[in-house]
Image (cartoon, rainbow, N blue to C red):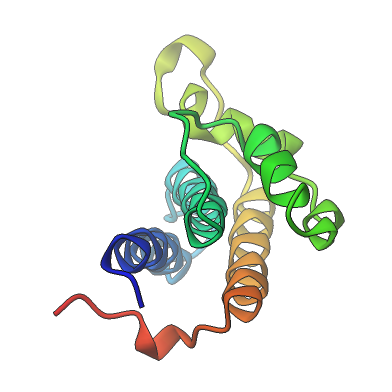
Length: 135
């Protein structure tokens, strides 16, 4: 597997593990904005990894809808996901100007979508999660 691709996938899995770590806390203790942020970051990196795998040049963007469209141009199965709401989690949720604290159920939903999407992308790439290692 290409090292550049591996690094993107590795970082996506790190984001997913960060979100999962927060989910271990109860609803009153988990940092829901962190779960949503890391879930969004995981999805973003997975979309970019898919594009890299297919030899596409990456643009610097956090816009999941844009990245999803780019992936859909390669494989229409990407149209089966809805990422519109996730764009908010990339930057806005991290700063007090747009103060918003997601409810625990929203955070859990964001994690489960990211986890499902991880499985989808890895299957599309024919890569097993345990094979994503940085030597």
